[in-house]
Image (cartoon, rainbow, N blue to C red):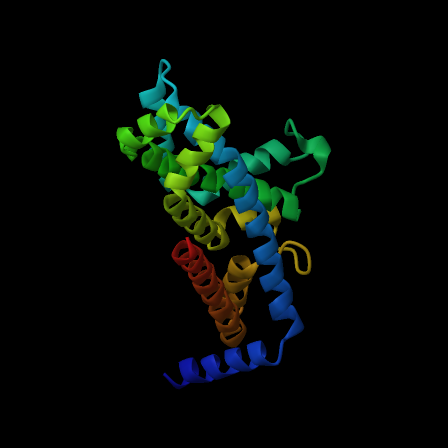
Length: 229
């Protein structure tokens, strides 16, 4: 118990004194995850809209697959991206393996199913009267899409927050395709795993507290946006 208390005190000290290594890892984690969430959101919203308002053969199977991919193991994503970006892989010429770019790609793949699935569910659950009203008011396609997205904006905010949390807390893919390189691809989760295995409990706790704090901040921001609307 004393070790836990001492570790917590040391962790707080590292945070308060703005330890350079701690904050370097934290900011890199935020940058990678924010970039991945932004890219995934930009890709997922149009896909969810298309699925919600278009019928085609195999649609039900595709939606079921998307829901299944909610639980896609991160180590599997890491392996697939590794094979694609390795020197012998089809995209090896890009030289992205063991870089933040590769980690962003991995996180995008991880959270796209979550964003598409949640937004699609919200769109299909929308009252048909709302859709009919928008159309009856003479809205063109762009206005229709904008109005529909406004109706489900709270679900979109929640989905983005959930996706961000899922991405920033994953460790399997980050280690495989990032390599956990100090000063380059080391992020909060991989650093916690490494430092804990080395017995640096205080440093691990400092990183863990920051990770938890980031998650709280994201939820607070999303809640504030929701109340403001």
